[in-house]
Image (cartoon, rainbow, N blue to C red):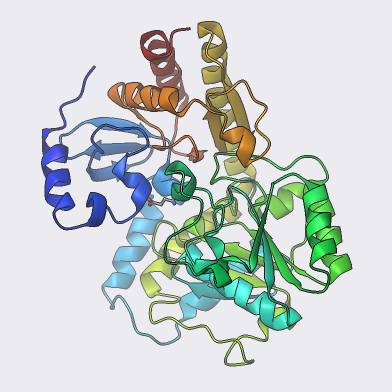
Length: 434
Ligand code: HOZ
């Protein structure tokens, strides 16, 4: 049961002498759950193998992109083919047009799109556009939502910021943080109060339509529709950050699932098939403010990178072609594992709340309900750490924080799910017994 991690430990020791915390992104250090982070050597389908040869069923999927599993053959083939003709040109290619056509097909609210290299760039640029379009300065975000690590968005943010209990970030001047109004998710009263207090000064609302970065928190009925109505009434731009939910909770993201038309959308993760790629887009009258058409500047040497476009076309193209098979399959597999594990928790007397939207969910170790960041924070994070370690020991790799979402892909099988539920049953008896 207990794994050999000799090689991973050696690598972590070497890494800590060179990379702050031994990582290039904080949550990977496993500080919230303890134990040695396995160093990954390879992935295939639903599995990861670490540097010591241990195999895991992967439930974080590179934090979302690997919806078709690791090393999805058409993406591998496309990237290899394109790489043979150079990895980057810094000039336009047909592939950018092709991926843009696929994005617009999946997201009808996106009339114009620009590709960038990370979700952070996408959200930062969308906010700049919203400010330019409205001539206003305040941004409304929601507690526990994470929109990347640009200065103005690191206010009551989720993901690693929530994992490490950091209220904001050092290095962000209060003059910048003060322009961001962080409100509780799922509370319309808070939104109305913010607009009443800052009438005519709020440029945009940016929201993860299903929160993924405080753990998974779906919107309450009518909440997103009301945000749409308030934004329209107040002349503010509604930005749906679909970096996690885009192509995941439905082909057309949460905006398709809940029937909302945003002004701007940000995408990442799946859109690049696991390569560094993200996008922002939306209404033409807003997007045409972007340079070279308009005065809002944004640029990037690796934007629209050919390798990322190739992986994105292979991935998004497959999702579009196979949507009638892919999304029902993701739904039934996700329901089977999310509910099956929750049923074992109930039998074992473990207090657990399962929040799920399609193929993303979180098993919160709290009686719940979890409707916002405050209620998510009532989770027993020490118990989660024990659960996480016990699952890893049994060959199941969950995201290493209570405040992240589990992601499932089309490569997972019913066998994987049965193994996962059996591992959880064992783990509950071992480390979470009531
Ligand atoms: N903040 C990311 C998840 N929400 C983690 C990304 C990573 O560590 O790769």
